[in-house]
Length: 518
Image 1 (cartoon, rainbow, N blue to C red):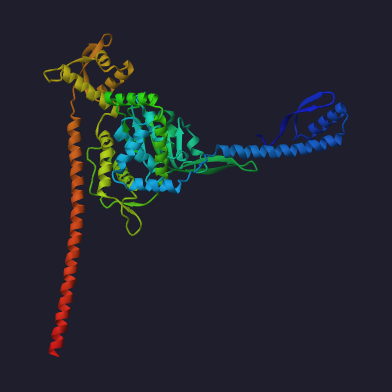
Image 2: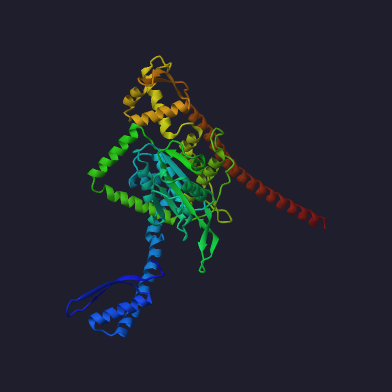
């Protein structure tokens, strides 16, 4: 690929005798070509000028071949999209599907058929977030969970429900790679980051800039045709949604604030659903066919969605709880999520004079129901996996301590055997609870093991009910405003009609009076 030379290995053979001559030669070196031509002419009794002219033609052909190779390599490195239009008959079927009521639950059933067992709320959340890649309201989701809990399977299945030409699945991102996209490869894309640990600090910085600013610029140097070194600013534009997987309980604050955070359900009921799904897939021959049909139908649904502007007249009526962390960005994510719910219902919602979709109160209610667990994660000090471990620990101690004082002292070995966890996982959970001052050491020795007991007993369920009730009250108030607004509008219309009739009657009486007087 060095354009300054054309180094080849050449084999010349005399077909009559089978005699061969092999040599390495640079066709751009005139002296080498002359010497080689003389040697060939001497060995095979050929004309020197004829050999030189044929080597010249051969050089021209090789140059064209190399140029085509360079263009092909550049073309292969570009990310190509093979758009697949939806047939008219299929499009009519999908539009009818969108117009039917209870759309979100019907989409959820298709996602379940596509291969996601259980995780009903989480899979709806991920599907809505993934579908924002082609709209003006891009969202990003961070899925947390322990190793082997099914995080990658979850986001990969959701990714398979999107049009494959718009999905990028990335395992690792090097520190400089995000600065060198040049052909709009990150425009209107869904990115699946299989493990956030595969991004170093430099890659994380570039990634979060692309998330929030949709643009990243870098000042670099280049050498022009005359050999002078100059500076140039390379700019990469982006517009994508992303689903990110991580096993870490805490990641950098700036990275978490840009994402809607959710967790994997790790209880025994969810494990049973996954095992039953795996067994049914192995035993039913038509199971995989039904999966593919559901994925293809969801892909066509996303292709039929149009990017439409949305106006939310109730944006100030429902407010998130004041206990949440990172409330500024979370409120922005909430409003964008509501807009995306409206876009999914674009065949059912009204439009204003500017052809913008108008958000309905039902859209806000659906968004609150789907986002509620993520909102609670922003309220809670513990991440999803650690919270499930702590609740399981409290339930275990509640069963042992019949007095209800919750002063029972336990060891790491006891909890590890009771929960059937590995030593490292149990140790990490207890260390985090100890660091966050939810449990404390009550005795023991480093060589023989420490004893622990719970020192802070929060009541998350009570807090959930409180926040849920607060959101429901706001939603009910919004519904009442809509109802009263419609009633008031009808009342105003009636009063306007009555007033018009009165004015007409008054005008007729005045005209009659004037006429009689004349």
